Image 1 (cartoon, helix red, strand yellow):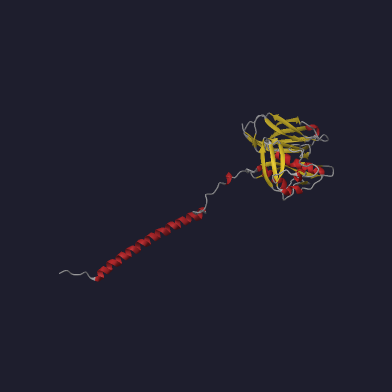
Image 2: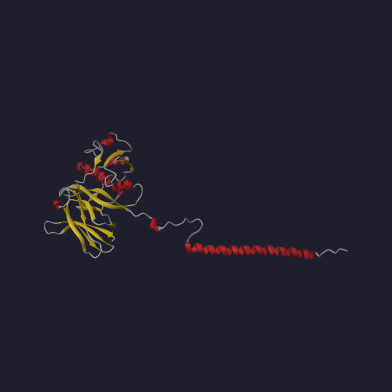
Length: 305
């Protein structure tokens, strides 16, 4: 005769299965907590999580560009242009950025000022066959300066753009047009004879600037030095010094024009670097009264043997 199993044993089996299932879930949850805890510790140390983008290396940021801009200046004796070198972010619209510096930038030279109204917007710059065409917003027409200031105001824009080697001439548009009101911009001068070309005749400050070498450039032998000068008899003195101030090379040259005119100069200095090192280039003119060094420009440079 078959005997039935006691119900209590069936209940015991069920209970055992139940506890086994619960135990497995507990183990799974515990391991998950450990993993999450470990993951959290890693995140805390690195300050990362799954939604944090991979960090960009700090040294991949482009260094600023040195850009020459021209402002106006008025003294008791005259009104003229000054050339300044400003540091601007390196971006694809560097031409527009240079022009924007004429609108909203801060002149560094005491007494220098901006001719373009602060509300002026640069709508675009196009270049074709050496001709740059600047498209201004209509606010540019509100510029209000004297007759000489009008000519210098235009030249400040032209000289700023022609600092870039691909530009030789400059024309202007307002809101994409050259209507009668635009042609009469700045009244006495107007835009009837555009395009305009580079003209440094009224750039009185600084007396000397150097276009080659540039700051921290690795120089070669012979050392080429180029620039612009408005100095007595056009005589410019150039020298190369090492980090301790020892003169490695020195020479003088004459600009293509002497003061009150402005001319270009160029000279090559031979030197023999015994070791790789660094130093500076100094360019100046000497006072005919006492021989003191005037208008000195200092450019840090490097060289290798």
